[in-house]
Length: 377
Image (cartoon, rainbow, N blue to C red; front, side, top):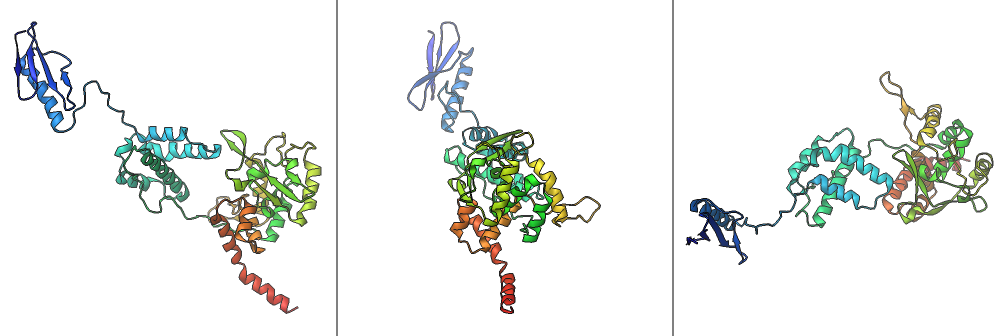
C-alpha cells in the first residue's frame, strides 16, 4: 500500500492498483467503506464529505438499508377494503365511492402527505347537488384515515371538516294515508297485494320480503319470522343474515291482514317449506325492477305522483321502501314505546325509531279533532 491519508472525517487509503478507498466510522460505531474505489484522492474525500453532511443533518442511513416504500392513499384504501368484513351491499357501495368519488383525486397522493387543505379542496369539488353521496364519500374517507391513524401510518387524520359526513334529507318522506294505502294495494297485481300490505303494516324491508319462505310465516300465531334478507350485487342475488342481532325478529301480523296472507299463501306460494312467498315468474328471487314496473302505475293511480313544471314526465313521490316508513309511523301512532318500535322495526339504535315517534306526534291536531267529533256524538 502506498499509504493512508486521514482527514477530519474518515480516511482515504491508496491501494496498490493506484486507486483510492474511502472509509469512515458511522454514528452507530460501525466502520463503513465506499461501495467503489476512486481514481483520485479528491474524489474519495468528496464522497466522505457527503457522508459527513448526511450525518450532520441526521439524514444518514447505514449502507444497504432499503428505504420503506411510500404508501399512497389508494394503496392503503385497497388494503383497508381487503381486510374489512363488510356485507356484500356495503362493499359494493364503498367500491363505487372509492372508484368514482375518492381515488381519482386522492388515490395517487402519499398517505402521510395529505393535509387538511387537500381534503377541503377535494370535498369542495364534490357535486353539491348530491349531498347524500357527498356525505357518504367524505364519511368513508374519514373512516379510512382514522384507521391509518390508529395503525400509526399518519400522526393525525386530515379529515376535520365539521358536519361533512352528514347530509340533510333532500326528499321529505310523506307517509301514505290509509286511503292511499288501500288504493296502492288495489292497483297492484294480485301476487303483490300482500307484499304491499306486509311492507306497510309490518314495516318489512324489500330484501326481507323477497327472501321470506313459507316456513317463515306462522299463520297460527300470526307471526312472520325475519331471519334472512337478500341483496342483489354484481348482477346476482345473495342471501344474508341481518347486519345486527336486532334484525333477527318476529313481527306480529295485524289481525285484519291475516285473511289476505292466508289467501296469498294458498294462491301464489308453493307447497314446500322453503318456497319463496314472493317469487319471480321463474321461481327465483324477485328483482326490484320487476316490482317497480307495477309500483309506478299504482302510485299514479293513487295520486302519489309528482308532476314536473316542464313537459318532462312526472315521477312517483313515494318509493316502495317508504311503505316501511308508513308502517313505522302507524305503529308509533298506537302509542308504542321506543323499545317496542325498535323491536318491531329491527333497529339496534334508538335514533331511527325516534324519528317515527316524532312523525306520529305530528298527528296530535288530527287526534284532537277526532276527539271533538266523538264528544259531539
